[in-house]
Length: 95
Image 1 (cartoon, helix red, strand yellow):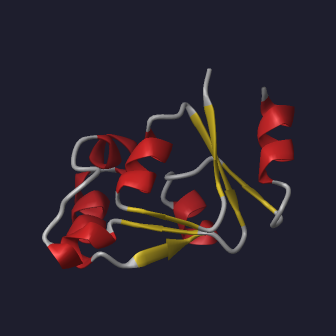
Image 2 (cartoon, one colour):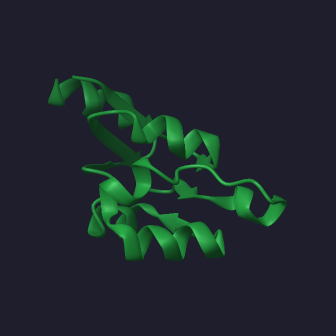
Image 3 (cartoon, rainbow, N blue to C red):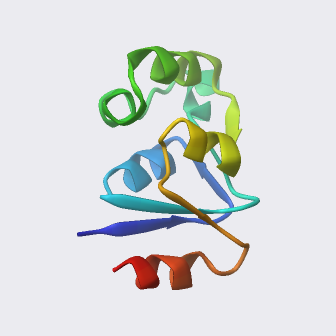
C-alpha cells in the first residue's frame, strides 16, 4: 500500500503522481489542480476520472481551477485531511 501526502500545491504532473497512490492525505491549505490546460498540456486524463468520475474530472481538466482540501475530500480525490505540517504523521498512522 502506498500513501501520498499533498502539501502545498500539486498541479499537473504532481497531481498525476499523487493519484498513483492508494491512499492520499492532504494538508488543510494544500491545493490540487490540472493547471497544465492553461499551457496546452493535459495530465491526469486516465487516473483522475477513475478516482472521481468522468463528469467531475472533465470539469477540473477543462477549467484548470484549483481545488482546496475540503472539496478534494468531498469529491473523493483524497482520503484524509490533516493540519498543516502533520500530513506525513497522518499517513504513517494509517499504514
